[in-house]
Image 1: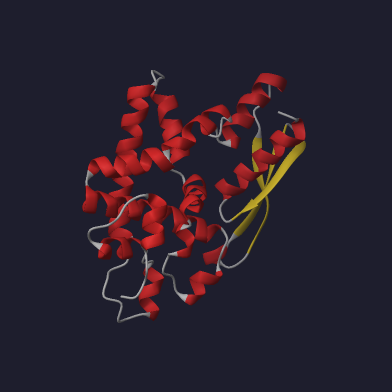
Image 2: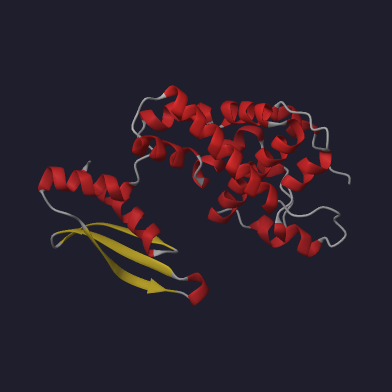
Length: 229
């Protein structure tokens, strides 16, 4: 298998004993559809394992270093391991350059790619765990993932916009916001929704997304900006 992963290994500071584990972590399911002779499986089983290792290492760190209540720690952990943050983290070692994708998937660089990169980080953690053990996996997570924690806490990135908007609107104007679908379009497998958030009868924000929940979050973000909260 002629793929040189030495630069990636150098970037993450880990030299794999079993290179196949690393290559499998980089293999997206779509790649196998076009490369039937590729001898390795796709990375979803490694992702399943890595997800559990990531959650344990992050949970252990939060438990040992922060005396905060469980609800806050849960929010911080969710913010650290979500797809947006993980895909950002992947840029620090150029993971995107090494993912094996179908030609179709390779063209899509939007939200779908974020999820592919986030899943590949989890698969990579699973591969490190199998190849090098728990301690090396924890060091990788400490270096690349937990290093983001101070920024998440400081910038309150663990607060989702909808909860924050509800809290602020109740506190400042004594109203609970309500959300309404303004428009929906597209085929069943790719629906798009435009949602408005209202304070009483006033429309204060709109958002679009592939689900009502995501459109509501975007509307709440706009509402926060509009009201200067």
